[in-house]
Image (tube, rainbow, N blue to C red):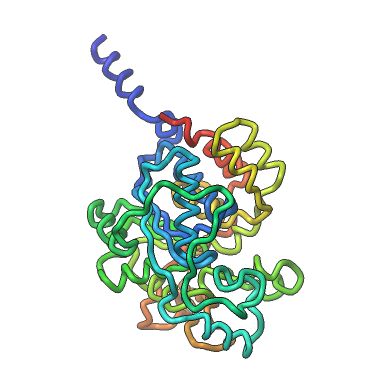
Length: 359
C-alpha cells in the first residue's frame, strides 16, 4: 500500500503535460525582435509559456522587425498582461554587426526594394529612417512597469548555457545578431547548448515573390544581418533546425483567433484586440523547438548565408553533403518541410488559454 501511495504522489507531482506527452522538461531561451502589439513575434512566446513542460530561462531582444528598445517594451508589457513577469528580459543588439541604414539604402538603389525592412521602414520607404534607434514611442497597449535586466543579452546567453550544459534550446526568431555576439565572445557557447532552432533559411522563393506576397517570400531575419547569420550557422551547435518555407503554410486567421478568445483571460483579450492576419512564422518555430514530433517531413543539408554585398546578399544557399564547399565550417541543418498542422493549431489554442491560469 505504501508503494502505491508513493507512486500516486509521484505522478501527482508531475505536470499532466509531461505525463501525457512523455517528454522530459525542457529549458529554453527565445531570442526575437518582438514587434508589437500582437503579431507573430509576440505570439511565438505562447508555445513556450503555455507548455508546463517548458521552463523559459529568459527572453533576449534584438533589433529587426522593430527597434530593439521598442521591441523590449512591447515584450515586457505582453508578459505583464500574461501574468508572466517572472520571466526575465535581456536587451541586446540595437544594430546589425555590419549593415546599416545607409548601406541598405545603397543596396536597394543597386538591386531593388526589400519588401519588408522592419525597423528601417517596414513595408514603406527607408528614406528618412534614423541611423540609430529613436526613443520608444507611445505603446497602444500601455507602457510596461516591468524592467529589463541590467545584463546584456549576449552575456546572459553565454551564462545560461554554461549553467545548464547541453540542456538549453535556443529559439531564434529574429535576426541572429545577439547569438553571433555570443559566439564571438565565447567560442564554446554554441557547443554548450542543446540545439538552435531558427526562423529563416527560406529557399527557392523567387517565383513566389512574383506570384504571391513578396514580403512572405523574403528572408528578413537573414537579410537584416547576413554576417551574424553566417557566424551563427557555421558555429558548432549539436543540432540546427531551420523553420523556413514551411512557416508560410499556416496563417493566423480570424477563426483561429476566435477559438483562442473563446476562453477569456487578460492575454486572450489582448491577442484578440491586436490580431494580425500573418503567417505563423515564429509560433511554428517555437512549437517545433519544444516538440520536434510535430515535424512530419524534413531533409538534412548544408546551409549558409551569402555575405557578399551583391544581389544575393542575405540569401540562403543549400547543398547536399557531397557537393557542399569544403573547409568552410558548414553544418548539417534539419530543414523542416511539413508539420502536423492540426496538432500544432490545437496545442496553440490550448496553450494561449492556459497562460496566466497555470499554477
